[in-house]
Length: 481
Image (tube, rainbow, N blue to C red; front, side, top):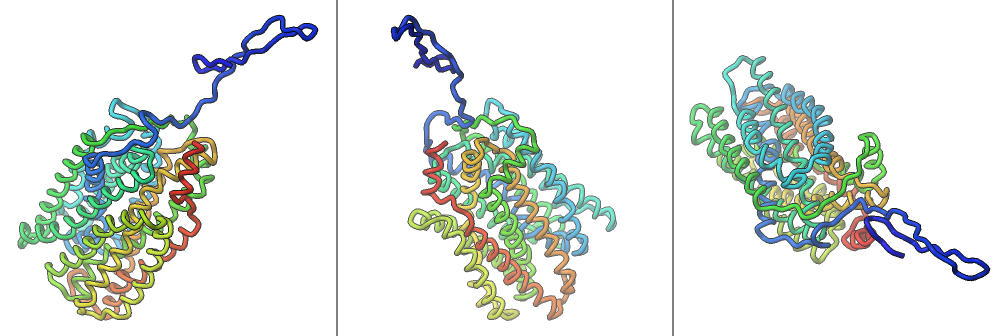
């Protein structure tokens, strides 16, 4: 048997009365692998590249953290929109993501440049990204209707630009390396820098807004978030210049309907998508209401508000290296599911023990909640690429861009639903922007920080009992690719 030019030639003998009188070669095409590794089997990443990869998520989290931590407060207490109108804004804009996220996933599958499949988006969209963030946190001197229209326009703009850089970013880990431990390590760096961004938004933004805004708090927030937007732009550029795409996946040319069908045949991707959506709802509800909890439930000033939010962010930062260390000695899937179930228990205990104004108990409970919640984060983001590989082995066809786009959509759908929940719940409990709150409103704020998100995290943990791609399982999976 010989091979040449993508064909295999098998020698066929011709016999007459038992004697070989001649032969010829029958040529058939070699089977083509849809999955191609370039350079080496399991590329190792340098520290600089892991840092560069991490700073990309720091840029992304300038937006995500502002959405988690301050945008609801900004819209109600600074921008001047009613809580129920904020809820509707968050909910309606998520329908745009139903189109833009899968579309961006398809675009990344189809377009490749000299820089690779994903990195060039950081180069060309970093400036539009920064501008969209700045405009979102600018308060125009319009009447209420004009402000509402402006809020819709700028929030839609930042959502679209955010999608255009986020889908390539979360897909990038799949082409940096295919080593599960390297992916996990890189995601540890990534999430550490993401939490640094959250720390800056929670601490620096309120302090900077008060310092530079003085009597004009809206102008202070414009300046503070403008600074964060500039930082995000520079970080995306740094990510572009310090990372390299090593692995090339040959994408099958499949119609959108077929790709969707293949994704939903991938049971592990479906589980991870549900986990992403449910977990994001709980996460955003808790973090969105943290500033309200510190200001009204604990009776804190701007310093207490900043330090309370920063306590949660500091705990989340510490959870990143802790998660990386634990998963070297303990199953990452077990860590994921049991940590989230524990969040539900601690949330209930916090609601029962922490009374209004009890700063002494509130801080350690919030620290514990934030630390345990984020132990799963490096695990989750390393699992996405593994579910893509799992789907490839299961179906024989690879769906990459739409898989990452679907996860991103689940995350942003969770953000939108959670934002709507917070707005409607604040309205239901009778919240008065920048006013004196009733006991019922205070109880509602406490519920939104503890038990309500705790329920979502518990469901998230229970779903992970159906997830089976451990490191040992993935090694077997990788051998069959």
